[in-house]
Length: 267
Image (tube, rainbow, N blue to C red):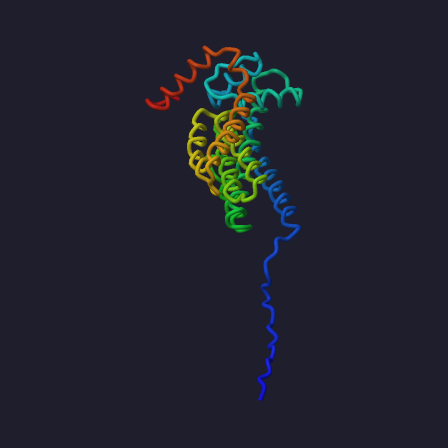
């Protein structure tokens, strides 16, 4: 007897091949905007307290009013605050300028939370986004520093952007996304360096990733290094362009901050 081949119908599992939803980008953008706005509202609550609550705030406001810089820190926070005061038509009074600066720092902190949540989303999906977003948004240290006109949140923003850019670069497989993510990584490290001098550690931390990333060919480390360095350099120079107006003061301030970092800061 001839053996007849019987085709047994195979039921498709309820979990068919997972295809990325076309609406997923819209949802993640909406969730990011909602998270950012919620954090900004939280971080700007009761931020109109007197400037003398923190001894460093008056000197920072004076730099905006007099259009001068002491270069104790990189210029990201001060430059963005100056742009914000001009855009908002802020009176050049200490209290008014400080309150705008606090709002800028709150915006930095809000964007940092979103960047960290997006990094977690790339790793663990929506669960990672929600848990990380809540944990970062309610971090007591971030909540406190977001209420002061200080450079801490600028540094945190640069660090969180660096984490997000590193993950995007790691995930990129095609040439164009890889180059774009590498440019973003250089920009993010530039933001970190322009937030505080300690942001230089972000650059040192990602160098192995930039130089050793796969696929490796003989020209890959050089090409990656050049793209990263160019994006980093352009970002730092654009934000800190004022250093060329007074290089001597800038050098003295950097040396003083290095001394504080190695021997302790008096406050």
